[in-house]
Amino acid sequence: MKQKFDILTSTCVPLPLENIDTDQIIPARFLKATTREEKFFGDNLFRDWRYNPDGSLNKDFVLNNPLYSGQILVAGKNFGSGSSREHAAWAIAGYGFRVVVSSFFADIHKNNELNNFVLPVVVSESFLKELFDSIYANPKTEVVVDLPRQTILNKATNRSESFEINAYKKHCLMNGLDDIDFLVENKDKIERFEQTHK
Image 1 (cartoon, rainbow, N blue to C red):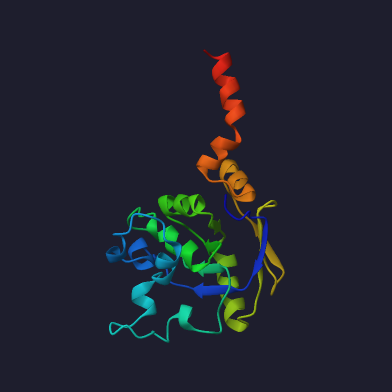
Image 2: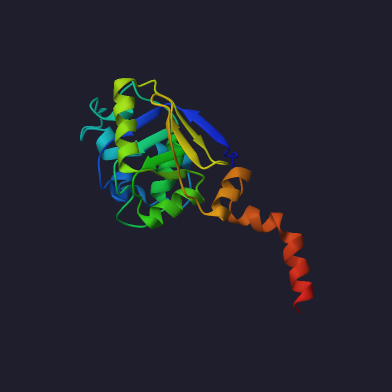
């Protein structure tokens, strides 16, 4: 069972690039691991952007900028395109992000995030732009993601939007359940169904 998701209030890390693909999120050379070692993948999130070829930190990349921190990644349109590797969601979760905000997600990556207890929040392009503007104006800007009500609030402007989420995935996130946990939780119902439908 994972940490339950209810209402998250956090500062944000802005990454306003469009078409960020899964190879940029976690480069292919790190896919040899077949188990979900969160620290390993989190340490290599955006590896080729975070580090220079000689292994030194790229001080120009946002994850290395001490001004920006938090559990919410705010990204440009079409986040998670490219290959279907689940390792990209592992890396995002392993780094400590609980929410990714964008105006559009690639479907497979969006589902991979949900399966790994990261909430992908789709907002309008105007809301996304305003959010970037708020974060750059004040890196301490907080955003409130309310999963029960399915709303996201920019506290700097007091503007909010609603977002969509699959009802089953919402239930799992709010109760800290993965697919196996959900089946175990409903074991009695499944057994009763099997008994009555022999």
